[in-house]
Amino acid sequence: MSKRNGKNEGGLSQGEIIQINEEQIKGHLDEMVRGTVEEMLNGLLEAEAEQLIGAGRYERSAQRQDTRAGHYERNFDMKVGRVKLQMPKLRNLTFETSIIERYKRRESSVEEALIEMYLAGVSVRRVEDITEALWGTRVSPGTVSNLNKKIYEQIEVWRNRPLKGSYPFVYLDGIWLKRSWGGSVENVSVLVGIGINEEGYREIIGVVEGLKEDKESWKNFLRHLKERGLKGVQLVISDKCLGLLETLGEFYPEAKWQRCVVHYYRNVFSVVPKGKAKEVAAMLKAIHGQEDHQAAQEKALQVALRLEGMKLASAAKLVREGIEETLSYMSFPREFWRRIRTNNPMERIMREIRRRTRVVGCFPDGHSALMLVAARLRHIASSKWGSGVYLNMKRLYEESLQEVA
Image (cartoon, rainbow, N blue to C red):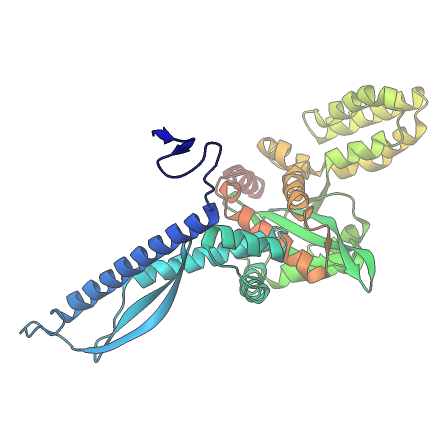
């Protein structure tokens, strides 16, 4: 560009800078795009109406199936803004458009995303910001609340569904969460049950709110499972929850109880000096590495004597008094032992729940805590977690037939 008297041909002095209002340009572009999209969509609606009628506007044809009765407006929210659709009205036929069907599916997917965000602990204000960025429209707190009610109903149906068939193996545990109550923060427990069904697949069979992991809470949970059809239980795997042990025999008297081996080890380590923990761990693992129940009992006595010789009387006492609770799994096929002697399947799920609930901090009430935990469990159940065979149950039934014979 040539310059004259220190100015260019556009009349700008050297050093002068042209300032561009990016927001204004962006808004203008959005408006242009919005207008183009609106025109295109309305054109598609007209074409669909003509195809349904069998004739164009004002066209006389033997193939004509109906006549028009004007239009009505319908809003369609998009990233570039809200467009107005001119929906054709017909006198006799029902006008259904694939555009609106796609819109409904889009609405549904957005609803699901909103619910997942809220249940994952994202604040309502943050949900509003996210929907404005992704959807082009802010979603009100009232909308989020209504969506929550919808998903809560679905979760309740899933939580209370009938349990069909037998569940030979059941894992039970609870998780502690925080809730605000009357201006103070209190603990609330959520009790969870996993079952291995007769085909060897894992299922989330129960999740309820419990004020504590006490006798009354476990009693209510076991009654809840029983009433929904839980049957065929042969082994219950859990930590040593006194309330659970006191009520288990009331509902499932024929079921054996397996104390989680990992939790048992931790209990023993609590009375062992840190410097001797590895040595004691090897001794305990040797007990559960035996070939059968009798050999494990004999090894346990040897370990107890050795612990006493190491001046670890408290640890020796725990081995003598508690080892039998950890050997119930040996009554079942050897192929199952590794997976039924600990509560590890439940522990992994609990870690995931803690990760998802950590962002919430303190729940407004116990029901909110229950819904978030149940929502996450339902998601886990629908993933690969529940789609693969966990135990080959043929071995269990083969041994049962041999015992009968």
